[in-house]
Length: 323
Image (cartoon, rainbow, N blue to C red; front, side, top):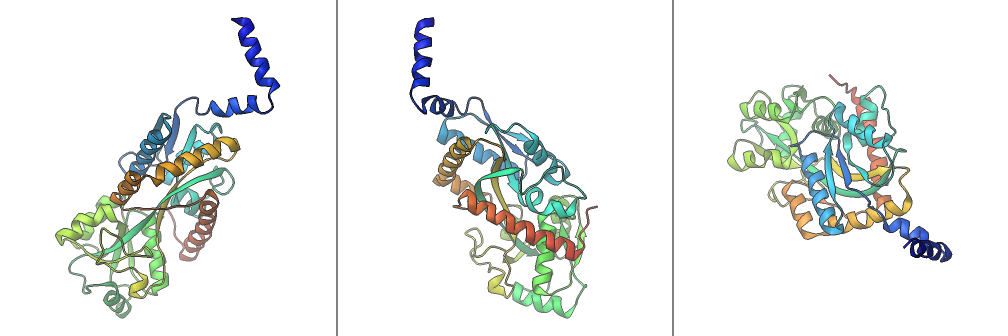
């Protein structure tokens, strides 16, 4: 037996590239872990688990989700940046920790531009601009007239200072040239409750959170922030159709530590791309109010670089501060 093992090892070393190929084929050698830098139960968690299931089904690897929330996504993001770069630990990349937080926090213990290797841009996440039924405008074109005639009279809720909902509304204000009072809450749920109660008049929120209330008539949808209308609300126009030339929304993708070996990055890019291309995956992303994206790692990297510039400039110009 020892002689046979010795001969096999010698043969592998004698054939150029065979030892390296054997090493590459050993990946993954343990479960792949997707770190979601937000608590369980949110859309971010749902997308992480959807990717884990799709990747496991497509590749046969065991894929787990590890929720590490806190500090606007910074805690989980830093853990991956400082963790082992062997391809077995990935990160759900989102707008906050990968683009906006550098301008919101005095110091980050990671560099979103240098510490990660982009793998897959999974989805874009359009928001819906919704209003209380008493708001005196049936659509965004009419709302713009109302807001411009009464600057500062109306208010909008957000899930908190520096959240994507807050940033979306501030970008809308700048592009539409309107003045609306910001009322921050500690999460989407209380913001939505006060909107439906009439305490505030407007809100930007993800489609799944508001769709049932739009259908029931408890809220009215003024516009969607995506480039095109979305299947869940086909009658609701986009911002651009309504006279505001802006695309606003979140996005989700997956990255690995920058030092992850290139052959393992290639394995992940290939299998994650196949997993995201599955009809079942795309349908489930649509159910979560997201739009599946077909993108190369290079395109994902360019998008994130542009988002860092856009949102950090807005945060500084608008003087947005955390609580």
